[in-house]
Image 1 (cartoon, helix red, strand yellow):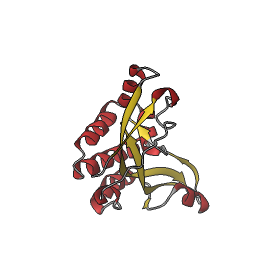
Image 2: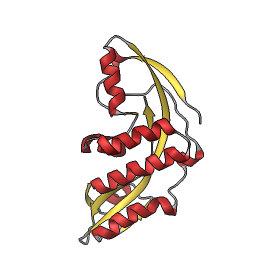
Image 3: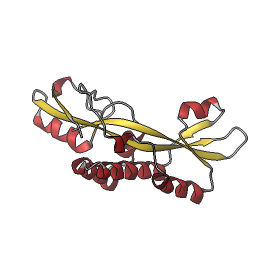
Image 4: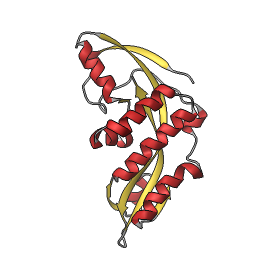
Length: 177
């Protein structure tokens, strides 16, 4: 596992997890970036089956809209399954610190915090890391360690002929702490 560390002045960083930009390039191991396996897809399939909706994999939200899908929105059951997927991948890649933060997010995070992690774009900072940075003061230089985590993300959609479905795809996010 390769990690990259950088230093930034907190005063220049906005205080939103999605708006914080990373100045470091992070790399990922093959186990983190590999496509979802059949076993990894099972929890998502079970959620869709319980809701009685079809599910597709490797379909982006933009491709679903191009096919006429409307009203794409998220499903908190799928958000939680995405965090569990990222946690399992972190553990498999022997990233215990990252796995512990993901477990805390799953157990204690608000719906917004969980959604920011799963549906957001760009560099992500865990809530506890933002709090630590803020508590250090606006002028303190902070060292950030960044790494990449990949996960399966699913969104609900309305189909053109009626009914709903789930569209899932793989996403990789840079995580900094």
